[in-house]
Image 1 (cartoon, rainbow, N blue to C red):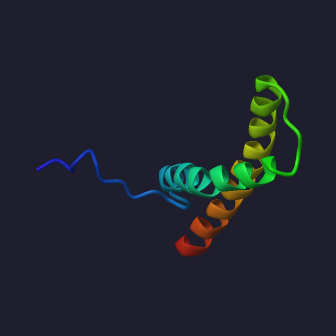
Image 2: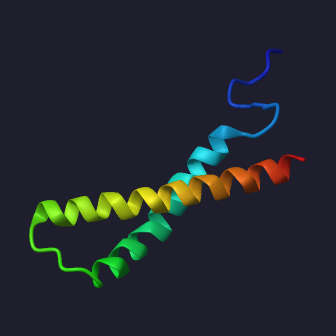
Length: 77
């Protein structure tokens, strides 16, 4: 019987898990962070709002991705 396609046995870090968890955690944590941070600055136009959300969201995403990767690497050891 052939092995099922859905199963994986990655060597090292499971990057699929890292990407999925990073996506979910970034949305759950990032949306409130961007909303709270936006109360501290004056955003007069839609482009200023979008630019602000992208800049703050990128920092949140990067920090989340690095953190999730480190957790995955520690769990694999």
